Length: 195
Image 1 (cartoon, rainbow, N blue to C red):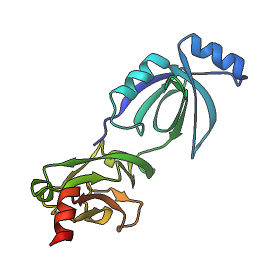
Image 2: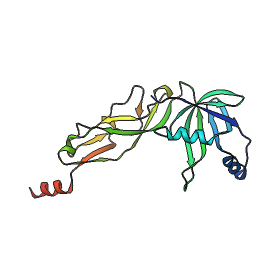
Image 3: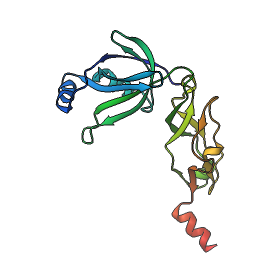
Image 4: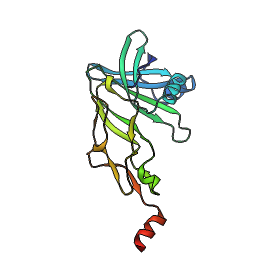
């Protein structure tokens, strides 16, 4: 399950883009928290700490204990991050205020494990889906979805519905969506056509 990380935040006054850019130069990341039971609140978090948090996480869907200066700590889900298109640096973060009973939707990395039978026979493993959208309660949020592909033969496909998900986790996509496929190599395909 995903671990909760503490992140310090401070309220910020609603300001224009010039003030936000100055805030970024001072080492802050402008952010906002919203959600059921809370009013939208403009915050700022330490940019360096936030960047390290992203670097050590397998996805941008992170649970945090947001420690807001003067207001205490509350559970939040990192809903989205705006990145600079050139540098990739985080420009803004949106947090969703939640509690243990709030169902969340997240994109979790799909890791394919093992060497498929079809690859040993000369096929090629092609992965089409690299992150699976799921819904779950905060305590059930996985860091990754591990999928065993050793049994996949040549020409076989692995679908969303074929995966065993952790307890409390449900995929949002249709069961027929293909995650991976064992394709035939060019040589194997031409030999099959000749035969």
